[in-house]
Length: 286
Image (cartoon, rainbow, N blue to C red):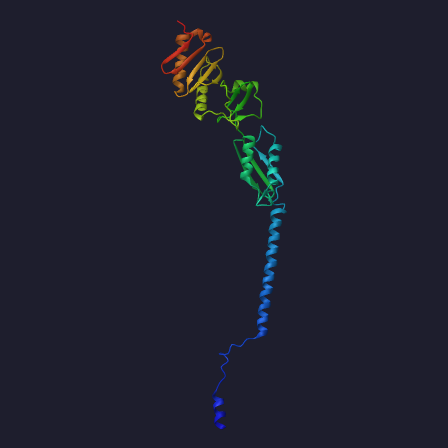
């Protein structure tokens, strides 16, 4: 017996090897985890509600004011109406574009360009709730005539139809008349002629303007290829080749007028300058 007691005294309990579990401690940890998860859900819902309010109800982001600049030939109300129509459209499935964050500037700009044929459109969003629309209108460059219709056109050949052509401007801009049987206008009200053709017309007009004795009445475009005709006031029609250099042809015209035709300029039907140094006159005078 004494020996057994001695052995028991030397044996120590190894508490580290035992995997003791406290059921009360485990329940406390699980409660904390659920409590944190619940607050996380509530926090997420609160953030979503705040963002929804910010997007759709905040006066700082909701479109309230449209500022338009650069327009002189059209009413601002027409442009504002198109912008408000855009704001009423939905984006991202069911959100309206009345919020500045969701307003599609590119789509609105494209609609304005297509509807009113502006040269350029720039839209900028500004807080609170403001959309600034900066517009560049097409400047008048010449007057296009087709049938009984007269309209301003810009240098690229786009028609400007908002304003009727005034009598004063008929002397300020040259007239390009289409005598083809078919219309020269496409679906966008743009002349179906190359940019080189219009560049030739502007160069010819500018050089002819330096000669006071060659007052231009109008330019004529018809079915003859590579040809631009210039009808002079109380004078003949001159045929110019758009494939040849402007200044050389005008210089030949001046030379023929001064040395060959002289006082018979108003009685001449036409002068054909399209064949280099050979100039054809109808009728020919001795």
